[in-house]
Image 1: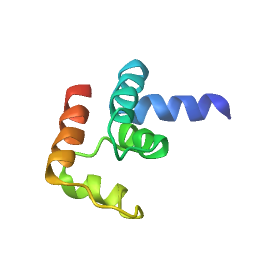
Image 2 (image 1 turned 90 degrees about the horizontal axis):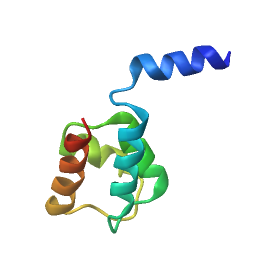
Image 3 (image 1 turned 120 degrees about the vertical axis):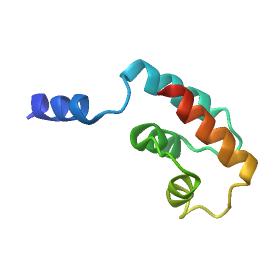
Image 4 (image 1 turned 180 degrees about the vertical axis):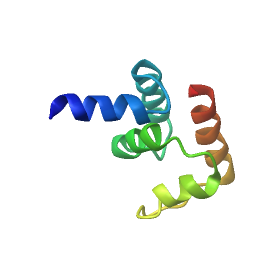
Length: 79
C-alpha cells in the first residue's frame, strides 16, 4: 500500500520534494502563514489569487494584495 501512495505522490506532484521543502520554508517566513497552510500551498501550488484565498477561507483574517503577490511569487519561483 505504501508503494501506491508514494507512486501516486510522485506522479501527481507538480515539483520535486526538495523544491517543495524550500517553498514551505520560504512561506513560513511570512507573517500570516501557518505550517498547515504552507504545506497545503506547496501541495496544491495555486496559480491565482482566488485559489490562494480559497485556501485561507477558514482563517480569521484576509490577505492584502501585497501578501497575495508575495505568496504567488514564491510559488511561481518554486516551479
